[in-house]
Length: 263
Length: 299
Image (tube, rainbow over the protein chains, first blue to last red):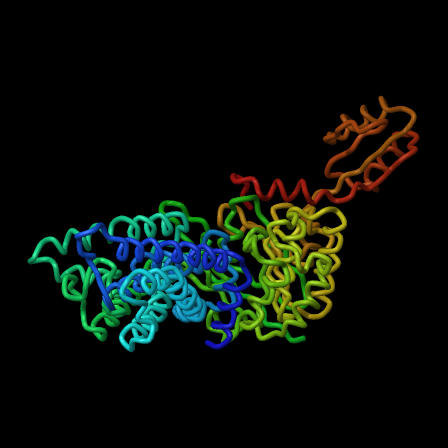
């Protein structure tokens, strides 16, 4: 297993795509952090910002998940779909015919890069949002224990997304299809579902079981509203839901894509 | 080097309605180069993929030594395989490609450099594979197969895309492998490509075994032919008609099929025909190969 892990890790870092994605993630999240912070602190005279104080800070920093999760998902899915796109899966399975071990190594190997992406993404939302919150809002709250905990959970969440990306890429091994589905789901389907579900009282609780909702629950904040207005799961339950999604995709991928003949 | 042999035993692969490999049985012995031949689409690659655990057989089995490929604890150390020259990540350098697979076959980064040098790619070690020519990819695929210095070498169409110099190099390498006692299986759709370096020949057509023997025995199947020329071509032609020989014109003389030089010479002598050339034509293995691999041909 150690050899398989080392091989998978070398596969990741020997190509350029992951750090290109990290650069884009950095730029994008600085911009989004600043834009959301601006919308929270610059409100027309006589109106109240939807989020104030600590809630505003936590919501802004949680964008690393709410908006940023597309990046670790894509990085993770590429780790698997690239094998099929460039047919390196043949050589990978020649040296590791145990396909379950191959998959486990691949899932675990993205954790370091996921953590790096988490640190980069979390730093980006803070760099983008904190100055505005501090200068024009109620403060950056970077010394607050809850906020700091949220930041650390944000890093963990990003790493989890990378693992989930590998699992999803195993299920949908066509690279283009996987990326299209991830983009559509994260940028369109899930945000609309979460907002839509939150409008219906009977279904409001369900939104927290969507992957992005569960991840917000793990962080303990959401850019969709204050902790009171958005239904969030307890952290332990959120972690279970996220790991459940990843495990579900991985098992399905193992039973479909990785059960088939290669070649 | 004591290398395991390969045993293909009743191997069958059904793809929907198509039986790509049909009850195939043959063995590959150590210390020799075995050519695995057949036209494109005959089932060679499918057979190799079943041998290497990438494709699951519908029936039968393939053994490397005493067990299936995937049952070896570290199969990459036992069998070095190069299946296709296109399965590289284009963004990775040649050296990085080898280093990716090095841990699982248990070799160091130093060994990766050595192998790259051995296949003549040391100058391109830091170049991305996307910029490699087809010939360079073939060499890199071979380097991947040779990483662990394995006792069994399986190569699928290794001469595709190689320049003449590269083909000569591969032939020499195959001979060297056999001399070192390795078990070598090399597929090709052209007998000519590998003829100079093989000992054993396995020919499949439409997934079925058509012929398996040593190259020498295959040669024995080939019909002899004799080239004969002299100052009186008309007399030679008449002699051929008289004897019922099948002939084809070739330059100044004629080629007599299925008749030895001795027989042609004796007949000409008896008929008082002056000969200037009487040459045994090399056994035309390629023609025999085409004959054997025609779909409707039987034995």
